[in-house]
Length: 292
Image (cartoon, one colour):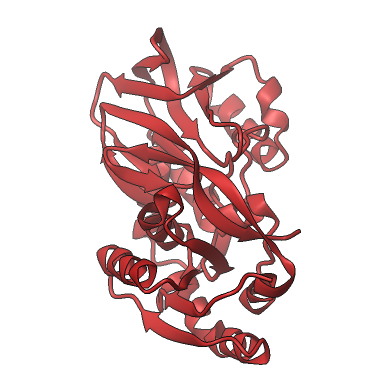
């Protein structure tokens, strides 16, 4: 049992309105626990951060109901164990919940306050912005931009749609990556710096990444034909793509990288900064409710 009252921070637009539709079932689950709670709907990422900060100061459990972007924004305010985070999946990808084994039904996830446990997990930070999953740039920059801009109702397939469109126009980039002082240079598709190792609605880009090892996993995808890249995409969902010789897997605590042309780095589905960027791990910085 995780004791305390709950501040339930909800992104009403998450998952195309999914979070708002499922909110009554979460409220019912919290009432069934006899747990005091209040609901606060977000109007922006910054508003979510402000609400989380206020909940911390009030000594409340902070429940984040939305997608990975909002959950990451809230987690950034809870770093250094300032409060406990309960993740109530309400978005499209829900990759942080996927990694931790948290049920996708937010009402079931709320029940973890009764039968779950509190764990300490790592966070990653780039340019002062905290993220949970994977920060990536390169072809992933184009994929994320297309996915965010499309009006097609594709659910988690929106990232596959983005990948197909991005690949059609892709040209290799030259990369410089420094991991804990050791520099690597290559030509290819992308650089990804993984905390949880999962993104894009269940794509296990770094399948062996741990949230409790104090390390970040780095994935370099070198140049190969578009057809080989395309054939490898389905394998990312089960992690078997790591056998591809075009991939290089590294680990470190601080990673800096740049490219020979401008790219926006994305993390948890949202733009996080322009290259060059430096990413660092924050070991055990977040207290989160997980299944026992």
